[in-house]
Amino acid sequence: MVKFPDKFLCVGMNSPGTPDGGVTSQVILYNKSSDLKKARGKILFFSGRVDSIKNGLLKNDIKGVISDFHYKGKEKNDTIYWENRWHVKKEETSFFCIKISMKDGAALRILLEKGVKVKVKAFIRARNYSGKIPAVSGLIPGKNPKEEVIILGHVYDVGAHDNASGAGIMIEIARTIQKLIKTGKLSQPRRSIRFLFPHEMYGTLDWVARKRDKSRKLIAGLNLDMVGGKNNSIKLRASDEIPSFTNELIVELLKQSSHIRKGLIVSNGVLDDEMFLKDPLIGCSTPTLSFGRVDHCYHSDADTMDKLDYNFVKNAGVVSAVYLYFIASAGIKEALWLAELVFSCWNNSIVKYMKEKNSSSKINFLIERGTENLNSISALVEGPERAFFNKKIAGYICCLEKYKKALSGKEKPVRGEKLVPVRSKCSLIPAMDSISGKEKTDFENKFKEYFPWSNYLSPMWFLTDGKRTIRQIHYFLKNNYGTSDLKRLVEIYKFLKRTKYIKFR
Image 1 (cartoon, one colour):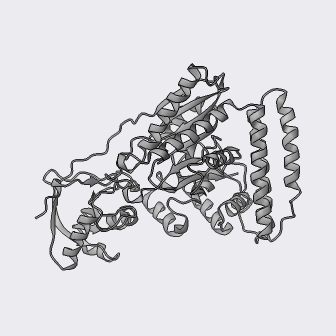
Image 2 (tube, rainbow, N blue to C red):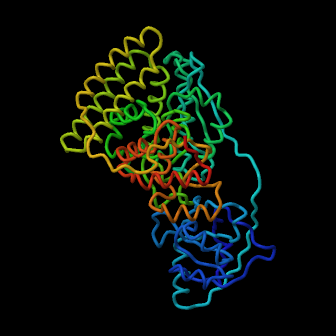
Image 3 (cartoon, rainbow, N blue to C red):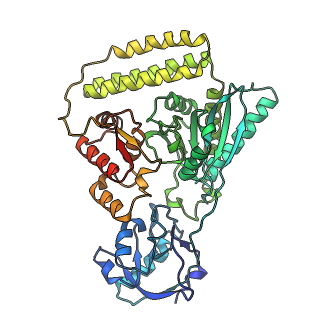
């Protein structure tokens, strides 16, 4: 007999409690979907993500699930992975979920595969209830209180890398900048610098919704999420949905750091604390910075201080502090330097794509994006200097325009492509939290290549700004993310209209 209470266990997200006397039942091994019927009224042992078979668990009245799933873990891994992707409504949740290590899971699997009848008694005391999770915010005031630069680092995760590293660096950045200002080594910045410690994405959404007066002041941001791992990997998730100079600036600062210039990966992505800030309806371009990877420890009790690299943590702090103070203090001099940097980046990209004989649609898209990013810098310049600056960037834009070609190879017309979708909900599309289980299942089945947490649905949702047609949104997705099917996109929008997420104008 194994007494799991003697071991460290984790209860799955949204798992209900068991009856007062607990639940005693036989364990059934899951290998294929037909095993769900065998497990009716029993406990299922499953090695995948629990949310991937949620509908089958509900349909077959499974009493509970034991899961040894681990993100990129190995069979001998003795750590417990906690899963935060189980998005179900509390009224739908009828089965409990217990997480065990892969090591214990391997032992349990051997018994079940040998045909040994295994019974488990589970006792869980848990409930769903209304509560509050505070978001801590601090400010280094600037000369102009109407503009702010923001840095985020989510808290309430339990790991040292994810995300004590990000939150800890933010505290040190705030202390250092404030000390340098007080001692006169740095001047008070033109714009304020805000430090926000939210409960990841939903905490950021709540802060934006409740603090509209503050979120309207934001002109740029940076998100620190896991910045201390012990390997030479630096990931920057770019902020692409709104025009901004932020991507070019943070990449340049990373390249200038001799300790971290190698291993930099720049990718498109929208899923993190910052995602609601770079929604065009908010308009704060906020790249996400991650240093190092500790996949085998991710979301588990193995994410401890010994997994952190001091130099990575330090360099992440230095780069982030320079980024924040540069934008907060920027005037005409810094804007001119930024314009040269942004122009150089986009000019080089266009030349590269032209040599690779890419489509004229892609090249035109790059010209448009480069022009928009150059124009975004003018927000840093005030008064009579702005006219001088605009004249300067007009020359850069003229140079980009020289590459322009007529669009060719247009796709066949699709009925509905000229419709303009308008959002009627402020929600996170991939989670589809506010629609019924059947509608959500229909959506998952019909558009499974885009579901659930994809770099397709969220950009699509952000680009739904009430101004763009479906074809224009498709044009952005295809050229920025490399994939989009116009016909499928129209179908997705029609589904969202039926579920009242959008309306057409």
